[in-house]
Length: 300
Image (cartoon, rainbow, N blue to C red; front, side, top):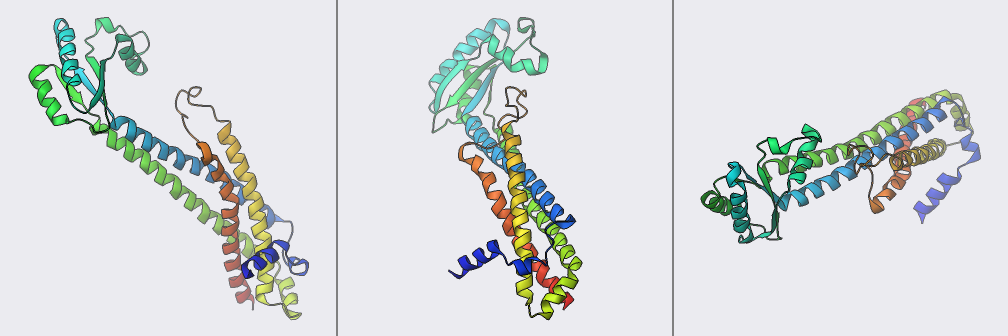
């Protein structure tokens, strides 16, 4: 109940004490701009962390369930070895399905590197077989031994060599996003602290008058805390709204050629930016209160 009363008093304010805080001026503009800019950046940092988390989960799940069998053999033996490999794969426990890629599918895989008019018929392209595991998975060592004996031109790639680095890279991007959010919060607190100290110094004479009439430091500090907390919340709300709108109008992956594919939030994740204004207000409350008490003690 006491905390609720303190919150109401903070929101309502005190007209007498509020006179010690300039309603306009460079400190007010600095607070609004800082809160808005940092909230805008925080939205993108959250989006980076959210997107990286989804990528790590998707890459880990998809690549862990698939493998590729490459058959390199003389042209006359490719079909025979492909059929032999498919028979081995169909009889291997843990493999849900296996199929040989068509020439069109292989060309689509090579197109980003060699162009759309790649003459596959004139190049010694190995035959690729896509392997999909079931929930239990298969014994890669045992399968390699069988293939070596029955299909000498086959080479199994279970994606283990490059799957883990991709997942780790996505995980580090997610960590970078959350670290960026912490740095944004720290920078916001530092800028608001400087603005509060500047406002306190500029109104030193008003503060002395308030003290002469019996005002306590807590009473004076509360006015600064309320004004800067409200300003920060307003600026952060505007910045978070602008950042969310910017994310929403980004071109999708199919429009941007895959570069921006998935950047943003998913489902209920679009509610995450709503948390930014209250968190920014909390940072402003703590930073302004600490700065106000230190400055008032120094002026005493």
